[in-house]
Length: 83
Image 1 (cartoon, rainbow, N blue to C red):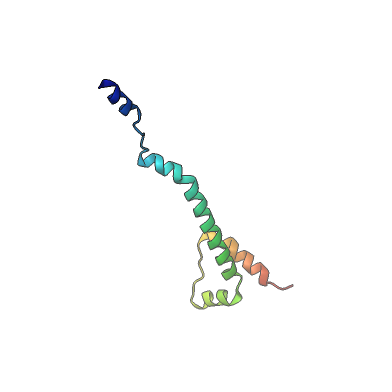
Image 2 (cartoon, rainbow, N blue to C red):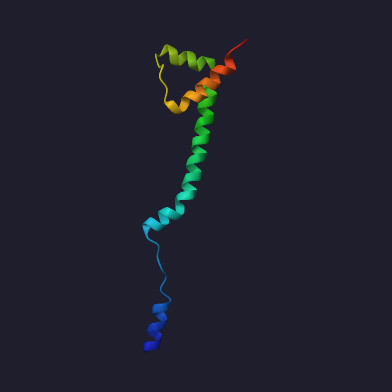
């Protein structure tokens, strides 16, 4: 009878804690977040390169943008400058 119990104890499966599961999932979540950030940057890049959108922002007195969008805004302004 003792031998059967010992075999059952050896087959016990180790279960990961929530912290270990979150740590293992971190690279996938980081890649997903980077992908979303890239898409959002592309969208705002297109918006800031549209002269009508910039005019709309000025008409609504929205002259301040978050710091992360300033490079996109400058890039959009460079595309519209002539000469």
